[in-house]
Length: 63
Image 1 (cartoon, helix red, strand yellow):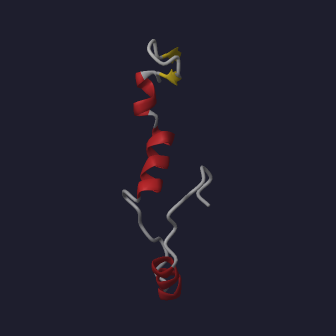
Image 2 (spheres, rainbow, N blue to C red; image 1 turned 90 degrees about the vertical axis):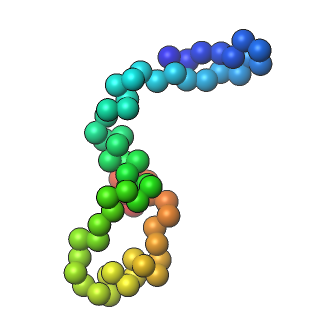
């Protein structure tokens, strides 16, 4: 729901509480913050590459 600050007139959004339990959102947040991150490959070259060039920003599709 979009609301407006009564003092400044600046609009803001109030999200429904169900957003907090959305599994897709939780997964995306975990990916972005690195929580539960795991390297699925056992290949050392891939592992070394990921350590050397850490992905600090991810898009919604994981790139």
